[in-house]
Length: 70
Image 1: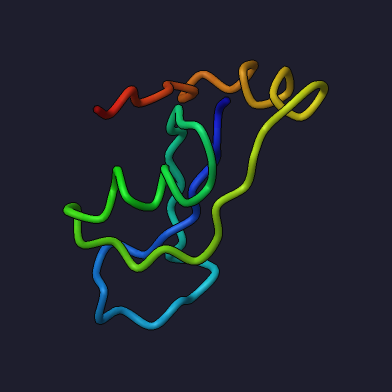
Image 2: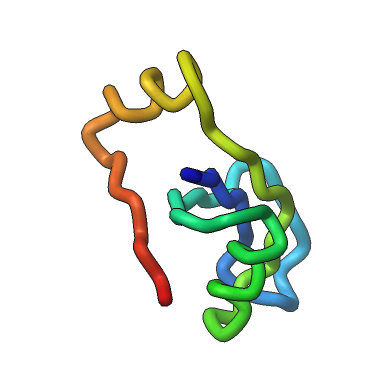
């Protein structure tokens, strides 16, 4: 499954909507995705599963790239 991860670049950065970034990660569950990106030092705000029309909508974005992290 594909998940959209909303995060701040630093664990010490207070979540501010204007500074929130996102990446797309392939994983089995939200917990699995959190484990895969744990070493990156992100302050993860939310992990959202993308399915159906929402996934198709995100694929239309030119910046859409799914990270396949082992």
